[in-house]
Each structure stands twice: as structure tokens, then as C-alpha cells.
Amino acid sequence: MQLQVQERSRSVKALFAVQRRSPSNANTDSGALLFDSSAFSAGNNSMQNYQYRIGGRYYPAAPVQLSTNPGSGITNGGAEAFVELQKALNIVGDYRLSSSVNTLRWAIPAATTTTAPRLGATNQPELDYSTTIQGFNAEGNPVIAEVTSPSANATGNVFVGNAGSCCFAMAVNLETSNGVEISGLNAEEQSDIALQIYWKSSQAQANVIEVYSYYDAMWVLKENNVLELIQ
Image (tube, rainbow, N blue to C red; front, side, top):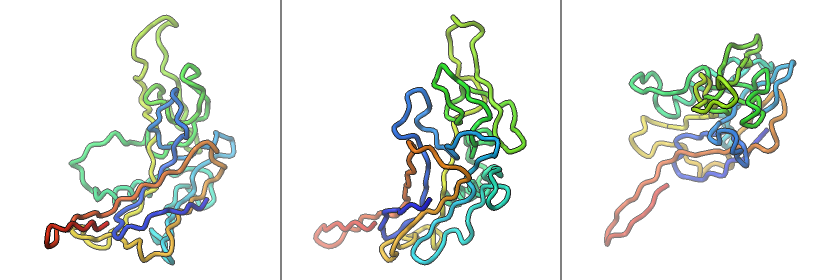
């Protein structure tokens, strides 16, 4: 898939692309950012890699690899993509920050079974702690179980599983200096910006890819109280 990104700011510091349900489903977590929305299959499925093309250059220089081997359908856990996200957020090696992002949420593919019939049948990691990951199969797909009440008539909070909704972003850092000034990539001078993504299997047609840009914006106060917006 190749997507055109409509961004023409003067200083783009980073880009973040995510896949979401559209429209959202009230039975699932509308904030889930899916890694791969194709259904589980014995032949495996995974996002294989992504890369941004800006003008005549590629960012990062090599595609971000998300499968164990090029062309493979077995996920590698998304470690490279997580490092790219840390670069874009400028938090590489910053252990002062705490986060709920872990191996049970980041870059999780479709589960081996369809669960949670009361919440709407799905095998995607989008049920917000109402399921528990019991393990992973040899291809990296989670083996999950639904969190159930002691009896059919029991009431209470069922969101006590260990598997939060999936979180994944295709990020790229476009800083050109240390970031203390207008330091991003000048998109005004670029002919186009495109996101190239490779998946092993076709994605859900109802989903959308959203791209968010992080850019510099600054008000400049000039003579006679004239304000100029630089973005």
C-alpha cells in the first residue's frame, strides 16, 4: 500500500501513522491502534515493513523491518518500529518515563482464536483488558482466553485481563538538528510525501490509516503589533 500524505508545513519534526476501525465499534475499544487487521490464518500474517518517501529520499534509509525475514508472515515483535517511535518522541533511553506499552500490547497480530462473543466476536487485540494472553504460538500469534465471571448472573468489572488493546504506530523522526529551533524537514520544498507499507495479507477494508504530523508552529511579533504565523 502506498499512501500520499498531505502535509506542507515548513518544519515537520515527525510523522505518525496508525490503523484504526472506521467507523468505530461500540463493542470494542475505539482507541485500539491495530498492527495487522487481517484474520488469523495457518499461513501466518504480519505487517512486513514500512518506510516513508519524501521527495527523492527515504526515511529511514532502510525499511523498518517487522517480520522475521523479508517477505515472511511471522512477526518479529516490532522492536525496530518501537525504537523509531522513541526517536520521534525524543525519549530514547529515557527511563524516567513510565508507560503501559509492553510486549502484551505493542505490535500484536491477530489471535489464534475468536473470543469475547458477548462483546462482539473478534480475534483482534482490541478488547481493552477483557482478555488474557496465555502464550504465543510458534509464529508469534497470541493464544488468548476471555475473562469470564464465576456465573452467568454475576455482576462486576470483567476488565481484569492482562491484554490491553493493541498500540502501534508507524513513526519517523525528521529532526535535522538538536530540536531547540525550527529544526524539522521543510515539507514546502518537497514534491510529495508518501508512506509505503507491506503486509503479508490484505487488511480489513473497513479500517483507515490516519497520519498525524508533528510540526513547528511559532508566532512572531513584529513592528506595529503585527503577528506572523510560521508553520
